[in-house]
Amino acid sequence: MIKRSLDVVVAGGALLVLSPLLLALAALVRVKLGAPVLFRQTRPGLHGKPFEMMKFRTMTDARDGNGELLPDAERLVPFGRFLRDSSLDELPELINVLRGDMSLVGPRPLLMSYLPLYNAHQRRRHEVRPGVTGWAQVNGRNNITWQEKFDLDVWYVDHRSLWLDLRILARTVGAVLKRDGVAKDGHATTDYFQGNDEP
Image (cartoon, rainbow, N blue to C red; front, side, top):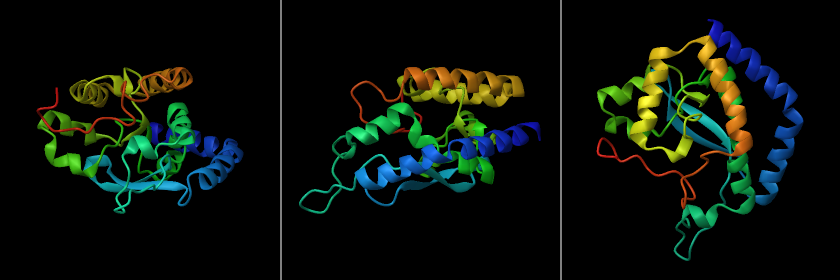
């Protein structure tokens, strides 16, 4: 109850305070990247229950001569990269927090298609609500292996507390300001999880 109350108070207050910034970003996304302004994708939440996660879009819909989407690296324009590097693209997730789909702190929600690939240990990350930030995000983010991420996620599940959440939130501010671990070196986006054989 305390964790949920903290989520509602902080997310609600942040949306109110940041509303001018959110409106400005929405306008810039519309002008520079097109519509829709928000990227929506179904992700697994608490106990794997699907929900629609929202972010500001960061890529265009540029396609080749056959109508196929171009590779991510070619669709990720400078403004979109800025949104990712600064983590400003994540701000709409505060709405997910208010709705109860997500928490401020918890394992990051991945793709629905990954669910069948998890082993029993990795599946434990869904014992709590997914978070806007998490223990893995302040301990390497995208510069660590998938197995390390899952181990950190499960460690959080086993050790979660209000104090730990506050610690993670404080460390997140520093990580965002330093832009630590936004994407793996040489990759426009994070690598895809390939299941239990991922090193």
